Structure formats: C-alpha cells, structure tokens
Length: 294
Image 1 (tube, one colour):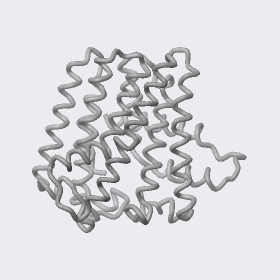
Image 2 (cartoon, one colour; image 1 turned 120 degrees about the vertical axis):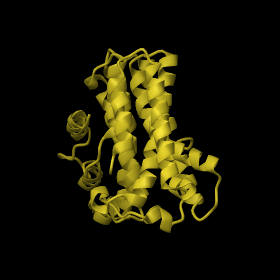
Image 3 (tube, rainbow, N blue to C red; image 1 turned 135 degrees about the horizontal axis):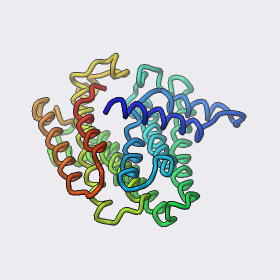
Image 4 (cartoon, one colour; image 1 turned 180 degrees about the horizontal axis):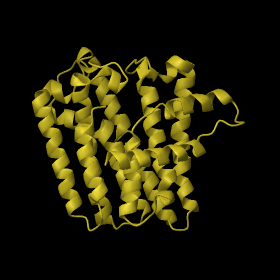
C-alpha cells in the first residue's frame, strides 16, 4: 500500500503545481508563501482519499483531481494558521521553518486565506467536466465546507484551544477529535463519492467510513505526540501535555488510546464491507492510518 500511496502522492503534487503557480504572478510573495507550505512535504492523505472514493464509484482520478487538490489546500491552510503564535506557536513543520517564521505572520495569515479561497475555486472547476453533474459539484462543495467550517475542523480547533487546562468529559474529547481532524477527512471521502453521482446510501456509508478513520487518525496523532520521534515527525513533540490539552492519552492513557483507534479502524472496515464497490484500497489505507509513525 505504501508504494501506491507514494505514487498517488506524486500525482497529487504534480497537479497542485498546476493550480498554484507563481510564474509571472503578482504580488509574488503570496504565491511563494502558499507554495512554500503546500510543497513542504506531507502524505497527501486527504486528496488520496478523494481520488480512491471517486475511483471506487466509477470516476477516474483526473475527473476529480481539482477537488482532491482542494482538500490538500484546505489542510495546508489549517496548518499554516495552526502554527501561528496565537495558536500552537510552532517554529517548525515537517522539518522546515513554519510559514510565519519564513515570511512573517501577516503573509502567513494571508497565505492560509489564499489557499482556502483557491480550494473552493478548484472544487468548482469540476463543473467544467461533462462527466460530473453540476448539482454534484455543489453538493460536494457543501460537504467540504461543512467539514472545514464551524461544525467541523474550525469548531474542533476552537474546542482544542478553549479546553486547554480544563477537565472535560470523555464525550467532549470524542466530539473534539471528530471535528478537529475527522470532519475534513470525512469530507474528503464523501466528496469523491458525491462527485461520482453515488446514491445517498452509498455516500452516507463512505462518509461514515471517513469519519471513523478521521477520528482514528487524530487519536494516533495524540499518541505520536507522546511517543513519536521528533526528527521523523519534523516538529516539536510533547507540547500537548505541556499545554494541558484535552487528548486521548491524557484521558485514556496510551494503551486505552491505541485500543480506541484500533476499534475505530475495525468499524471503518466493517462499513466498507457493506458497500457494493471495489473498496480494497480504502480498506488498506484504514490500516495504514493505524501503523503510521509520522
């Protein structure tokens, strides 16, 4: 599976370069800042999930590539803003200086804003493809906006910040994780199915699968912040405990957190078993979410 993920990652990067080009663009600094973070590395898991879901439902990778690239732009914008002094205050991301350390806070904020805006331009580009119904482009954009917005990623980030140093219930920790990371991963999967004109039941199953692996992904992130290798992760670790953040290890311990993530991955695979499509790649990627070390 890792070889396939690498191949798809390179395909995504090739297309990202088409959608964010700084050639003869003005003002050049905003394009350079956006590209700096966009091409700073990363697994490209969100766009890959969009591609795989669409392929399972009958479209080609190229058909949904603009929407897939949009998912990476949204993810990158969130990282740029996450690293700012007012948020997590990180100096390094993936082993490189963070955007605000390289270009200054103002340009970093604007680079994030630019990537978010460009992302929705890219989603709407799918309407030019005759294989994709205009209503499905609209519905995919709505799904992505929901995953990225106040009910999803932004809401989760707000809870992450406001719950620092406070004792919150396990149920609230679950909700925080589902929103902070899970919602955008859910939207990545669902968007691929929606663009492919899958029926409502199928879209709902893909969405539930995405929600489960997205939740598991954030739990593993929490675990890696405790036991991960800083060089491999490319950023400072053990910051969650220092900031007294509401994480799974702080509530359930490492063993309990691993068990929860494993359960979510099993549930995700069970959901795929109920979809009458070739979902082998999505089944494998669910396992990768558990085994990753960075």
